[in-house]
Each structure stands twice: as structure tokens, then as C-alpha cells.
Length: 302
Image 1: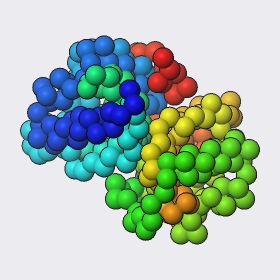
Image 2 (image 1 turned 30 degrees about the vertical axis):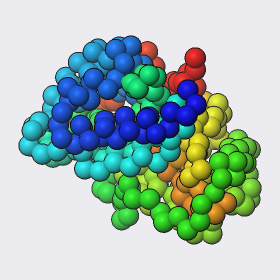
Image 3 (image 1 turned 180 degrees about the vertical axis):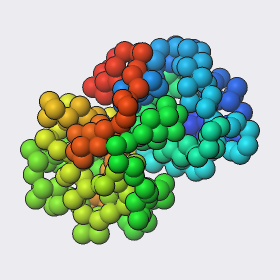
């Protein structure tokens, strides 16, 4: 419903506060009992979940179960990046020690749709390699280490504001350039000091300048591209790969500064990126979802 931006932002801020304090009962209460949640990838914790209680029971077993709960706050940082009429886009950094050693250190892109002050639908994208290697006890054929400049939550400094109309026009132009793989058009709407932040530990992950990492991640082009959320600071795009051999789905956040895109935040299925782009599969095999498949084109469709 138009005009609910302040209330919806407050709900997500409360969600992040309760997560940070370990008040998971309150976190659950902030969700509609009829919650729909889309979890990225094809792992055991991926797919389309219906119902708040079923979702949290599944996550408690398969995500929190292998971790040392209560040893420290799960939330290491959060950032609300966009607020639209009914949607809020946030970034979350969470982590805990694993029971058998090592750490679960995860970053999330979370897109919340709210109804009547409750979270009714979520799209959540994250580092699926982290799920497989820490929670499912699988490994990559070739182990990865953190990039020299790892992904982080900090936003690039914005020097001048933009209007919502400017943001929508830039995001529309950028989306059209993605579909046609027109790098000249992409560069025309971006700052010369563009910052690209890509999730995970793949060879294209981390913080970089320019479009090289993004071009590599978007192998084969994209389809089903949608701008699902925008405000005067940026826009969020959802899309999937147009290459049939690359089963990839993406969430991109475009941050706008003075009429140009200054920051692009890229979330993707890192297990699929390792397999298809770098011939580096999960061994002995990636875990499999028991839920209906994650499908970014069906999210927020009423």
C-alpha cells in the first residue's frame, strides 16, 4: 500500500534488531503465519517455503542445527538499502562457529514484501558455497580463499541525491543494456569510479571497479529481468541467465549517485557459478532441495 515506507522500514529495522539480540521468538512474530519465502540455489535449504512455522522449523534444523547457538550474536552487520511502497531491500551479514570447527560466515540479500505491518514474502539470496561447505559438509573440487577485497556491507559515499524518476530511468536503461549485453550503454549510465561488489569466494567475487566481474558473472546474457523495488537512492533488479547450460538466478542492487550508478551489488548462486564458470563442482555432490524450486520470476507475483 502506498505511503507505508516509514512503517515498513521500521519493521525490518526491528527484525534486524531482534536478530542481533538473539530474540528469535520476536523475529518469528514479525512474519505473517502465511509467509512465502524464496531461498536461492538448489541446496537442502533452498526453494519455495510456504508457512512461517514450517520455514523456521526447517531452518532451525538445517542452518542453526550445525552451529554453536548462543556463543555470540548471529548478526555482524545490516544495511537497509532501498524502501519502496511495499518492499524493503536489506543486506545482512551473519555468522556463528560451526559445531565441528570452522565458521558459517554468510551474507544475504533480503527483499521483504510487507502486508499490514508483517513480513508476508521474502526473496533471500546468499553464498550457496558457504551452505554446502559448512552446513552440508561438502567441499569444492578446488578450495577457495577469501578475495583480496572481500564483499562487505559498507555503502559507497553518495555525493549528491537523485530523484525517483532519475533512478527509474537509469535502472530501466541499465536493464535494457543487460538484456542486449551492451557494455557501452552500461558504462554510459555508471560513474567512472563504479564499485562492483560480488558475493562469495569465486574468482569474480569481492570488491572491484568496472564491469569485468559483472560481465563474467552474467555469462550468456539474462532474461526475465524485473525492477522490483526502487527509491531515490537506487533500484533492485531480479533476473536469470539466458544460457540454458547455466542455471543461474541473480539479485542486483544499483546504488545511484548524482544521476549515475555508483555501486552494483551482485548476488548469485555461487555453487552454480563455480560449476559452470570455473569447472569447480561441489564434491561428492551438492545437496538437493526438498521444496519447490527457487524461481525468481515467480516472486512478488500476485
